Image (cartoon, rainbow, N blue to C red; front, side):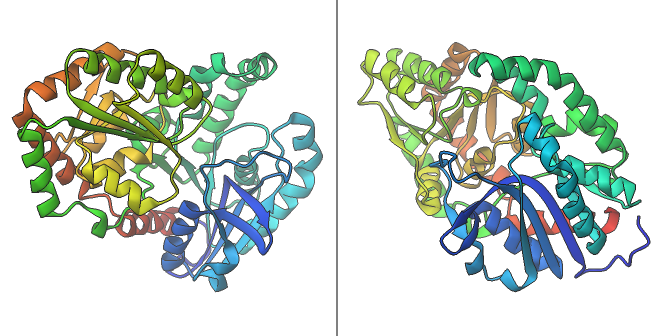
Length: 414
């Protein structure tokens, strides 16, 4: 550890790739990041948060609920710094020297350092790690997914010019990240997929989770009993997914799996809540299969309570994730007593390893996923037990406990 006094209530610096934007009343962040900042402020005397400023002419992500930083309760113990949007090589090198100076000044003022790595050009968190090493400072690295795997698996869906750039730079990015992990004092890796990908390069790796569910969000006993009684009555299965309709989420596989189950006489009502680039393709496919009465696409919802209510009401959370990421929606489903059933991964296996509140199926095989749905329909007692097991697995994921655990690690090692 560094020679600075390690004590509760110090100054912590986070450098991330999270988008900021300038609103009418100053800088804004998404609502989930703001919830996390409130938790960090409970564990540190001051929080400095550095993110990427979204250009004014960039099309806004409709799935983001923006919050004015000025309105946060922890505002008096919070400094938010906007860094340049520099993912193009030329812009990155143009801004490199001035941005590294800003990073260096904040690093020198902080007691604890945590950098969220994820890319090559424009990844200011990686530059912060280089600067921390230069200043002989200990730091933590945070990975919320296996970025090189995500890029590799989504290459066919991106434009040719960018695809060529990614193919050329990907090996460099992987080696760069491994180098920065080796020089860190703490590796925070979200979920088992991310831990397995990077643990060998860290002297101090930890599997952690980033959630925003409270203990009060856990499905109550009465609702759980009502759900299990309903599925055992033979009522149509209520199937749900919440997330972006993008290539890495496998939305067309999801439609195929649901459609095959419906066509094999499984009574069901399915819903995908979210928007994204493949939403129109989903609608077209559903229409071609004449399943509009059984598959609903209501679009994006920013109402967190309404989404959790949908999860508590659903019998199955069916997913087709294709990359090594750590989607929060699976945890939220378990907290809501909704079994997770979909493409198997180390991440999803770990979430349910205590009580088996989910079932994994082979990657890129919607037919196998559909067969699992059909089996659960035909074995309603098994489904009822799966629902109870999901609620039990979800009970360990509350925001306050998990944030406090990560804060303790950062205070001790970084």
